[in-house]
Length: 248
Image (cartoon, rainbow, N blue to C red; front, top):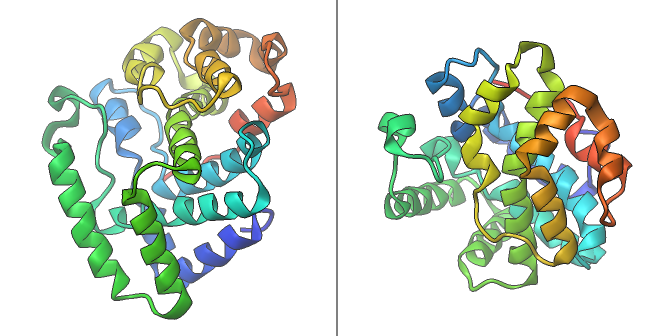
């Protein structure tokens, strides 16, 4: 875990001692996994653990463009490290995925919330002291009315869905038929809705959600990041997209 924020590293080390990181490493990100299976794409499946690592990276990059200070970023990192821990019990529950793709994994919003609440209650019994307080505080914050911290968290959690598509293009260019892949992953170019925070984050989101840009990246690589007209630098784009990915 070297190289990541100290607070995030501390939480992940505690989760690792409790055996929860090893569980995150074997649970696939169900949205992409379901589509990989349904469209027979023959690609590896990204893990929940990688989603957490990606969000840590994305939070540190986007904080510069969303007026998030160091203290606020630390609070966001707590949400990142804890937000999917319930899924070590429930499994990764699909969002914006129809039954025809999701199959038996399909859950209503109400079912999902109920399962996650029960899992969080069960997990809280494993924790103690300050660590338990931080976990319960994160769960409570995620359930509270939106504020600056939760809005930023939901932005990065949402934009990670489409950044992950670009990462697949980067890592598996030789295995991907780009038109079949874009069709299979079409939902990620439109969901989740209205997650941007300001003009810059909206512009970045629209850049990533352009299938034309994704095709250009497939054909030309990172040079297309130079065409972005907002503040996010080409190097930031590369750090967001061109990274290793942990698979189950």
